[in-house]
Length: 262
Ligand SMILES: NC(=O)c1ccc[n+]([C@@H]2O[C@H](COP(=O)([O-])OP(=O)(O)OC[C@H]3O[C@@H](n4cnc5c(N)ncnc54)[C@H](OP(=O)(O)O)[C@@H]3O)[C@@H](O)[C@H]2O)c1
Image (cartoon, rainbow, N blue to C red; front, side):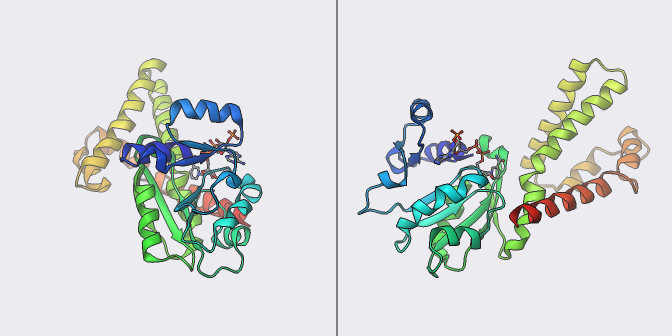
C-alpha cells in the first residue's frame, strides 16, 4: 500500500526528491531503489534533525506499529503531519505512541483499499483533535493520489468503513468467483466461465465508475420485465438474498474490526 501511494505521488508530479522511504532491510531497500527513484532511509534516526518532514506516513502492518511509531515522536512539536493507514490502530493509541501530551499533534488515521494499486482506491480518513484545516487538506491530497477520499468525524465509524470499503474488494472478488462457479454449474467450461465472470464484474465496475447513474438505475437498465435478468434478480433480491447476506457480512466485519481495535 505504501508503494502504491509513492507511485501515485510520483505520477501526480511530486518530485522524487520530496519522498523518503524508510526501509531498514538493505536487500529490500536495494529492490525498492530499482522500482522507485526516491530517497531511502534505514530508520527515522537517519532523517536530518534540523528539518522535520512535512508528512510522516505509517504504512507498516498494524502489529509492528508499536515498534516503529515511537521513533517518529522526535518530529512532534513541529508542523509535521502524521498519517497512519494501519488498519484498526486508533487515533488515541497512535497519539500515545507519538506524543501523549501534545494537544496540537496533527494526526490522521486513514483506511484505504487495494484498488489504490491501480489508482482506484477509496480512502476514508478521520482526524485527531489537533488536526487543522491545512493538515486535513494535505491528507486528502495525499490519499487522492490513489483514488477517491471521504472523511468521517466520528472515529467509531471507521469500523463500519473498514467493513464496507476496506474489506469490500474481497466481496467483489468473491462475486467473480461465485459467478464463475454458477456458470460452471450451468454447463460452461471452467475457463470460459472464469473469463466471462471476471470481465463482467470488471466491466460493470468500470461502467458504474464512469456512468452518472447510480447502481440501482444501471441495474434497472439491464432488467426487462419478465426477462432473464428479472428471473435472476427475483432470487438475488429475495428475503434470503444478497442484501441479507451482505448486511450480516458487514456486521460481522464491523464487529471484528471493533474487537481488533480493542
Ligand atoms: N492492503 C490493504 O488493502 C490495506 C487497506 C487498508 C489499510 N492497510 C494498511 O496498510 C498497511 C500496510 O499494508 P500492506 O498490505 O501494504 O502490507 P505490506 O505489503 O506487508 O507492507 C508493509 C511494509 O512495511 C515494511 N516494514 C516492516 N517493518 C518495517 C519497519 N520497521 N520500518 C519500515 N518498514 C517496515 C514491510 O517490509 P517487509 O515486507 O520487509 O516486512 C512492508 O514493505 C497495514 O497497516 C494495513 O493495515 C492495507
